[in-house]
Length: 348
Image (cartoon, rainbow, N blue to C red; front, top):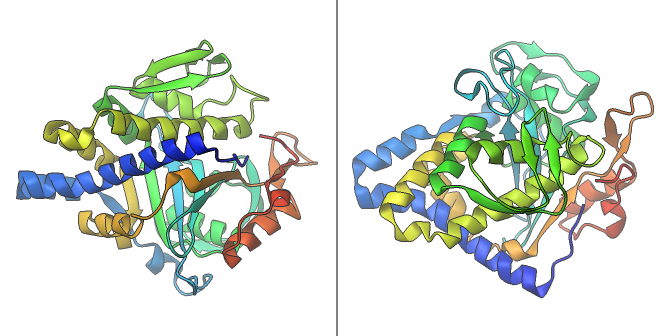
Protein backbone atom coordinates (compact mmCIF):
# COMPACT_ATOMS: atom_id res chain seq x y z
CA UNK A 1 0.00 0.00 0.00
CA UNK A 2 1.10 3.61 -0.35
CA UNK A 3 3.05 5.10 2.52
CA UNK A 4 3.01 8.70 3.59
CA UNK A 5 6.37 10.48 3.70
CA UNK A 6 7.34 12.28 6.92
CA UNK A 7 10.20 14.75 7.37
CA UNK A 8 12.19 12.05 9.17
CA UNK A 9 11.60 9.60 6.31
CA UNK A 10 12.67 12.22 3.76
CA UNK A 11 15.94 12.64 5.63
CA UNK A 12 16.45 8.89 5.61
CA UNK A 13 15.41 8.81 1.97
CA UNK A 14 18.11 11.30 1.07
CA UNK A 15 20.69 9.05 2.75
CA UNK A 16 19.35 6.03 0.90
CA UNK A 17 19.47 7.91 -2.41
CA UNK A 18 23.14 8.68 -1.80
CA UNK A 19 23.79 5.04 -0.94
CA UNK A 20 22.16 3.86 -4.17
CA UNK A 21 24.18 6.36 -6.19
CA UNK A 22 27.35 5.14 -4.46
CA UNK A 23 26.66 1.53 -5.45
CA UNK A 24 26.05 2.42 -9.10
CA UNK A 25 28.95 4.86 -9.26
CA UNK A 26 31.16 2.36 -7.47
CA UNK A 27 30.88 -0.10 -10.34
CA UNK A 28 32.57 2.46 -12.57
CA UNK A 29 35.03 3.70 -9.93
CA UNK A 30 36.33 0.19 -9.28
CA UNK A 31 36.77 -0.46 -12.99
CA UNK A 32 38.71 2.75 -13.54
CA UNK A 33 40.67 2.67 -10.29
CA UNK A 34 41.86 -0.93 -10.32
CA UNK A 35 42.41 -1.23 -14.05
CA UNK A 36 41.31 -3.01 -17.16
CA UNK A 37 41.14 -6.44 -15.49
CA UNK A 38 38.64 -5.26 -12.89
CA UNK A 39 36.57 -3.38 -15.46
CA UNK A 40 36.50 -6.41 -17.77
CA UNK A 41 35.51 -8.72 -14.96
CA UNK A 42 32.64 -6.55 -13.76
CA UNK A 43 31.47 -5.83 -17.30
CA UNK A 44 31.63 -9.55 -18.06
CA UNK A 45 29.49 -10.35 -15.03
CA UNK A 46 26.52 -8.52 -16.50
CA UNK A 47 23.99 -10.47 -18.58
CA UNK A 48 21.50 -8.82 -20.89
CA UNK A 49 18.54 -9.57 -23.13
CA UNK A 50 17.44 -7.66 -26.23
CA UNK A 51 13.86 -6.83 -25.22
CA UNK A 52 13.33 -4.42 -28.12
CA UNK A 53 14.25 -7.02 -30.73
CA UNK A 54 12.01 -9.64 -29.13
CA UNK A 55 8.94 -7.38 -28.93
CA UNK A 56 9.28 -5.43 -32.16
CA UNK A 57 7.00 -2.46 -32.80
CA UNK A 58 3.77 -3.78 -31.26
CA UNK A 59 4.22 -1.84 -28.01
CA UNK A 60 3.04 1.33 -26.27
CA UNK A 61 4.94 4.39 -27.49
CA UNK A 62 7.71 6.04 -25.52
CA UNK A 63 6.57 8.75 -23.12
CA UNK A 64 6.56 12.08 -24.99
CA UNK A 65 7.41 13.95 -21.79
CA UNK A 66 10.56 11.91 -21.17
CA UNK A 67 9.36 9.73 -18.29
CA UNK A 68 11.24 6.45 -17.75
CA UNK A 69 9.65 3.15 -16.72
CA UNK A 70 11.65 0.25 -15.33
CA UNK A 71 10.43 -3.31 -14.80
CA UNK A 72 12.29 -5.01 -11.94
CA UNK A 73 11.92 -8.79 -11.52
CA UNK A 74 13.29 -11.19 -8.94
CA UNK A 75 13.80 -14.61 -10.55
CA UNK A 76 13.05 -17.59 -8.31
CA UNK A 77 14.94 -20.24 -10.29
CA UNK A 78 16.43 -22.70 -7.79
CA UNK A 79 18.29 -25.01 -10.12
CA UNK A 80 22.04 -25.05 -10.73
CA UNK A 81 23.77 -22.53 -8.48
CA UNK A 82 20.46 -21.70 -6.82
CA UNK A 83 19.63 -25.26 -5.75
CA UNK A 84 18.71 -25.44 -2.08
CA UNK A 85 18.04 -21.71 -1.71
CA UNK A 86 14.83 -20.76 0.06
CA UNK A 87 12.67 -23.67 -0.94
CA UNK A 88 14.79 -26.15 -2.88
CA UNK A 89 15.16 -27.16 -6.51
CA UNK A 90 12.37 -26.25 -8.91
CA UNK A 91 13.46 -28.67 -11.60
CA UNK A 92 15.07 -26.10 -13.86
CA UNK A 93 12.07 -23.77 -14.09
CA UNK A 94 11.88 -20.17 -12.95
CA UNK A 95 9.16 -17.67 -12.11
CA UNK A 96 9.07 -13.94 -11.49
CA UNK A 97 8.91 -14.13 -7.71
CA UNK A 98 9.03 -10.34 -7.29
CA UNK A 99 7.81 -7.72 -9.76
CA UNK A 100 7.83 -3.92 -9.55
CA UNK A 101 7.12 -1.25 -12.14
CA UNK A 102 9.19 1.83 -11.26
CA UNK A 103 7.83 4.99 -12.89
CA UNK A 104 10.20 7.99 -12.98
CA UNK A 105 8.50 11.12 -14.37
CA UNK A 106 10.16 13.87 -16.34
CA UNK A 107 12.63 15.81 -14.18
CA UNK A 108 13.77 12.66 -12.30
CA UNK A 109 12.90 14.18 -8.92
CA UNK A 110 10.45 11.53 -7.72
CA UNK A 111 9.36 8.00 -8.48
CA UNK A 112 6.47 5.60 -7.96
CA UNK A 113 7.10 1.88 -7.47
CA UNK A 114 4.11 -0.37 -8.19
CA UNK A 115 4.39 -3.94 -6.85
CA UNK A 116 2.48 -6.59 -8.81
CA UNK A 117 1.44 -9.59 -6.65
CA UNK A 118 2.74 -12.81 -8.17
CA UNK A 119 -0.63 -14.54 -7.64
CA UNK A 120 -2.47 -12.03 -9.84
CA UNK A 121 -4.47 -13.61 -12.67
CA UNK A 122 -3.69 -11.77 -15.91
CA UNK A 123 -4.33 -11.94 -19.64
CA UNK A 124 -1.10 -13.00 -21.33
CA UNK A 125 -0.68 -11.70 -24.89
CA UNK A 126 0.88 -13.81 -27.62
CA UNK A 127 4.66 -13.37 -27.51
CA UNK A 128 7.97 -14.79 -28.67
CA UNK A 129 9.47 -17.30 -26.23
CA UNK A 130 13.06 -16.77 -25.12
CA UNK A 131 14.02 -20.23 -26.37
CA UNK A 132 12.41 -19.68 -29.76
CA UNK A 133 8.91 -20.13 -31.09
CA UNK A 134 5.65 -18.37 -30.28
CA UNK A 135 3.61 -18.52 -27.09
CA UNK A 136 -0.13 -18.14 -27.75
CA UNK A 137 -2.24 -15.69 -25.79
CA UNK A 138 -4.05 -16.99 -22.71
CA UNK A 139 -6.58 -15.73 -20.18
CA UNK A 140 -6.48 -16.05 -16.38
CA UNK A 141 -2.88 -17.19 -16.00
CA UNK A 142 -0.85 -16.44 -12.88
CA UNK A 143 1.44 -13.50 -13.39
CA UNK A 144 4.53 -15.31 -12.11
CA UNK A 145 3.98 -18.17 -14.59
CA UNK A 146 4.52 -15.86 -17.58
CA UNK A 147 8.29 -15.85 -16.99
CA UNK A 148 8.34 -19.67 -16.88
CA UNK A 149 6.36 -20.00 -20.10
CA UNK A 150 7.85 -17.23 -22.21
CA UNK A 151 10.85 -15.58 -20.54
CA UNK A 152 11.68 -11.92 -19.84
CA UNK A 153 10.34 -10.37 -23.04
CA UNK A 154 6.98 -12.06 -22.54
CA UNK A 155 6.76 -10.65 -19.00
CA UNK A 156 7.52 -7.17 -20.35
CA UNK A 157 4.83 -7.53 -23.01
CA UNK A 158 2.31 -8.73 -20.42
CA UNK A 159 3.03 -5.76 -18.13
CA UNK A 160 2.80 -3.35 -21.05
CA UNK A 161 -0.55 -4.88 -22.07
CA UNK A 162 -2.03 -4.60 -18.58
CA UNK A 163 -0.72 -1.08 -17.93
CA UNK A 164 -0.60 0.56 -21.36
CA UNK A 165 2.88 1.82 -20.37
CA UNK A 166 6.10 1.08 -22.26
CA UNK A 167 8.86 -0.47 -20.16
CA UNK A 168 12.03 1.43 -21.16
CA UNK A 169 14.33 -0.84 -19.17
CA UNK A 170 14.36 -4.29 -17.62
CA UNK A 171 16.32 -5.49 -14.59
CA UNK A 172 16.27 -9.06 -13.27
CA UNK A 173 17.87 -10.06 -9.97
CA UNK A 174 19.01 -13.65 -9.52
CA UNK A 175 18.62 -15.53 -6.22
CA UNK A 176 22.20 -16.76 -5.86
CA UNK A 177 23.60 -13.33 -6.77
CA UNK A 178 21.28 -11.68 -4.25
CA UNK A 179 22.60 -13.96 -1.50
CA UNK A 180 26.22 -13.19 -2.45
CA UNK A 181 25.53 -9.44 -2.41
CA UNK A 182 24.20 -9.55 1.15
CA UNK A 183 27.08 -11.75 2.28
CA UNK A 184 29.57 -9.36 0.66
CA UNK A 185 28.17 -6.67 2.95
CA UNK A 186 28.43 -8.94 5.97
CA UNK A 187 24.66 -9.03 6.42
CA UNK A 188 21.75 -6.61 6.63
CA UNK A 189 19.86 -5.46 9.73
CA UNK A 190 16.05 -5.50 9.67
CA UNK A 191 13.37 -4.92 12.27
CA UNK A 192 10.11 -6.86 12.27
CA UNK A 193 7.00 -5.85 14.20
CA UNK A 194 5.67 -9.42 14.25
CA UNK A 195 7.22 -12.85 14.62
CA UNK A 196 7.77 -14.82 11.39
CA UNK A 197 7.64 -18.62 11.23
CA UNK A 198 7.60 -19.92 7.66
CA UNK A 199 8.49 -23.58 7.23
CA UNK A 200 8.52 -23.30 3.43
CA UNK A 201 11.13 -20.54 3.27
CA UNK A 202 12.88 -21.82 6.39
CA UNK A 203 12.68 -18.44 8.12
CA UNK A 204 11.91 -18.17 11.83
CA UNK A 205 12.32 -14.78 13.50
CA UNK A 206 10.99 -13.35 16.73
CA UNK A 207 9.62 -9.82 16.63
CA UNK A 208 12.48 -7.34 16.93
CA UNK A 209 15.77 -6.43 15.26
CA UNK A 210 17.87 -9.06 13.49
CA UNK A 211 21.11 -9.24 11.52
CA UNK A 212 20.40 -11.42 8.48
CA UNK A 213 22.99 -13.20 6.34
CA UNK A 214 22.46 -13.88 2.65
CA UNK A 215 20.44 -17.07 3.05
CA UNK A 216 18.22 -15.53 5.75
CA UNK A 217 17.75 -12.36 3.68
CA UNK A 218 16.62 -14.39 0.69
CA UNK A 219 14.10 -16.22 2.87
CA UNK A 220 12.97 -12.87 4.32
CA UNK A 221 12.06 -11.35 0.94
CA UNK A 222 10.38 -14.58 -0.18
CA UNK A 223 8.46 -15.52 2.96
CA UNK A 224 4.69 -15.31 2.89
CA UNK A 225 3.26 -18.35 4.73
CA UNK A 226 4.47 -17.07 8.10
CA UNK A 227 2.84 -13.64 7.83
CA UNK A 228 -0.63 -12.23 7.30
CA UNK A 229 -3.08 -14.48 5.45
CA UNK A 230 -0.30 -16.46 3.76
CA UNK A 231 -0.79 -14.76 0.41
CA UNK A 232 1.71 -12.74 -1.60
CA UNK A 233 0.27 -9.48 -0.31
CA UNK A 234 2.07 -9.53 3.05
CA UNK A 235 5.38 -10.42 1.42
CA UNK A 236 5.35 -7.25 -0.66
CA UNK A 237 5.67 -5.15 2.48
CA UNK A 238 8.68 -7.19 3.64
CA UNK A 239 10.36 -6.76 0.27
CA UNK A 240 9.99 -2.99 0.39
CA UNK A 241 11.31 -2.96 3.97
CA UNK A 242 14.37 -5.00 2.99
CA UNK A 243 15.29 -2.79 0.02
CA UNK A 244 15.48 0.23 2.32
CA UNK A 245 17.52 -1.72 4.87
CA UNK A 246 19.95 -2.95 2.20
CA UNK A 247 20.62 0.53 0.85
CA UNK A 248 21.00 1.90 4.38
CA UNK A 249 23.60 -0.80 5.07
CA UNK A 250 25.64 0.23 2.03
CA UNK A 251 25.74 3.78 3.31
CA UNK A 252 26.52 2.80 6.91
CA UNK A 253 29.58 0.81 5.84
CA UNK A 254 30.93 3.61 3.61
CA UNK A 255 31.50 1.04 0.86
CA UNK A 256 32.82 3.68 -1.54
CA UNK A 257 35.58 4.52 0.94
CA UNK A 258 37.05 1.00 0.80
CA UNK A 259 38.29 -0.19 -2.63
CA UNK A 260 38.48 -3.79 -1.42
CA UNK A 261 34.95 -3.80 -0.04
CA UNK A 262 33.68 -1.85 -3.05
CA UNK A 263 35.03 -4.35 -5.55
CA UNK A 264 33.58 -7.26 -3.55
CA UNK A 265 30.13 -5.64 -3.44
CA UNK A 266 30.27 -4.53 -7.10
CA UNK A 267 31.37 -8.02 -8.17
CA UNK A 268 28.40 -9.60 -6.36
CA UNK A 269 25.96 -6.96 -7.62
CA UNK A 270 26.90 -7.32 -11.28
CA UNK A 271 26.74 -11.12 -11.06
CA UNK A 272 23.19 -10.83 -9.76
CA UNK A 273 21.87 -8.69 -12.62
CA UNK A 274 20.38 -9.35 -16.02
CA UNK A 275 19.28 -6.19 -17.83
CA UNK A 276 17.96 -5.09 -21.18
CA UNK A 277 20.70 -4.57 -23.77
CA UNK A 278 20.39 -0.78 -23.51
CA UNK A 279 21.95 -0.77 -20.03
CA UNK A 280 23.64 -4.17 -20.21
CA UNK A 281 27.21 -2.86 -19.81
CA UNK A 282 29.12 -0.88 -17.21
CA UNK A 283 29.00 2.24 -19.36
CA UNK A 284 25.29 1.76 -20.09
CA UNK A 285 24.49 1.16 -16.42
CA UNK A 286 26.55 4.18 -15.37
CA UNK A 287 24.81 6.39 -17.93
CA UNK A 288 21.41 5.32 -16.64
CA UNK A 289 22.51 5.97 -13.05
CA UNK A 290 23.72 9.43 -14.03
CA UNK A 291 20.31 10.27 -15.49
CA UNK A 292 18.77 9.53 -12.09
CA UNK A 293 21.15 11.66 -10.03
CA UNK A 294 18.39 14.09 -9.05
CA UNK A 295 16.08 11.35 -7.77
CA UNK A 296 15.41 11.44 -4.03
CA UNK A 297 14.23 8.17 -2.52
CA UNK A 298 12.56 10.25 0.17
CA UNK A 299 9.95 11.25 -2.41
CA UNK A 300 9.47 7.71 -3.73
CA UNK A 301 5.97 6.34 -3.29
CA UNK A 302 5.45 2.59 -2.95
CA UNK A 303 2.09 1.27 -4.10
CA UNK A 304 0.66 -2.20 -4.53
CA UNK A 305 -1.43 -2.85 -7.62
CA UNK A 306 -5.02 -2.75 -6.31
CA UNK A 307 -6.32 -6.31 -6.30
CA UNK A 308 -9.37 -8.24 -5.16
CA UNK A 309 -9.69 -11.95 -4.37
CA UNK A 310 -10.82 -13.90 -7.42
CA UNK A 311 -14.43 -15.07 -7.09
CA UNK A 312 -13.75 -18.44 -8.71
CA UNK A 313 -10.48 -19.11 -6.82
CA UNK A 314 -9.96 -17.27 -3.50
CA UNK A 315 -6.29 -18.34 -3.54
CA UNK A 316 -5.74 -15.96 -6.46
CA UNK A 317 -6.29 -12.24 -6.97
CA UNK A 318 -7.31 -10.11 -9.93
CA UNK A 319 -6.73 -6.43 -10.68
CA UNK A 320 -9.44 -4.44 -8.90
CA UNK A 321 -11.34 -2.00 -11.07
CA UNK A 322 -11.69 0.91 -11.36
CA UNK A 323 -8.74 1.36 -8.95
CA UNK A 324 -6.12 -0.41 -11.11
CA UNK A 325 -7.18 1.52 -14.19
CA UNK A 326 -6.95 4.80 -12.28
CA UNK A 327 -3.43 3.89 -11.13
CA UNK A 328 -2.12 3.19 -14.64
CA UNK A 329 -3.97 6.23 -16.05
CA UNK A 330 -2.24 8.49 -13.51
CA UNK A 331 1.21 7.16 -14.38
CA UNK A 332 0.61 7.48 -18.12
CA UNK A 333 -0.50 11.07 -17.65
CA UNK A 334 2.36 11.97 -15.31
CA UNK A 335 -0.03 12.74 -12.44
CA UNK A 336 0.22 11.80 -8.79
CA UNK A 337 -1.57 8.54 -8.02
CA UNK A 338 -4.98 9.43 -6.51
CA UNK A 339 -5.95 8.06 -3.10
CA UNK A 340 -8.80 6.10 -4.70
CA UNK A 341 -6.29 4.13 -6.78
CA UNK A 342 -4.35 3.04 -3.69
CA UNK A 343 -7.23 1.16 -2.07
CA UNK A 344 -6.90 -2.58 -2.55
CA UNK A 345 -10.04 -4.59 -1.69
CA UNK A 346 -7.82 -7.59 -0.89
CA UNK A 347 -5.75 -5.56 1.60
CA UNK A 348 -1.99 -6.02 1.79
